[in-house]
Length: 120
Image (cartoon, rainbow, N blue to C red):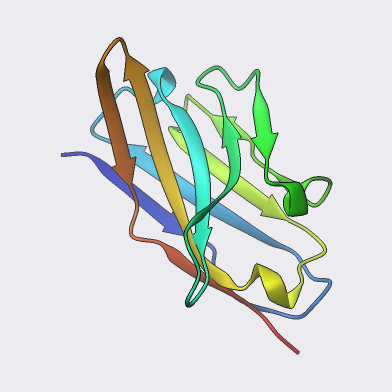
């Protein structure tokens, strides 16, 4: 059974930091790119950060560059999202996503999400 379980969300003051974790099971984690998405109330889901299966390539949304970091540990089947200098606009539900495209076959898995609230 495929599972992605996020943790680490919560309430943080502006300027603070949080580290989200996502543990994977039920699929070949090291073969998948991993992504963090977020969705704020009334807004579309947006890509926060992504990392390739080997960890050699990372990408970030424009407003996250320089503040967020997405490391992964393939031995532990985990991916993280280190978030620094958090702002109220970062308030959202954050989702862990695993994706692999192999020829025409797409495997796409999602976690249940974890709430991040940035407020004083």
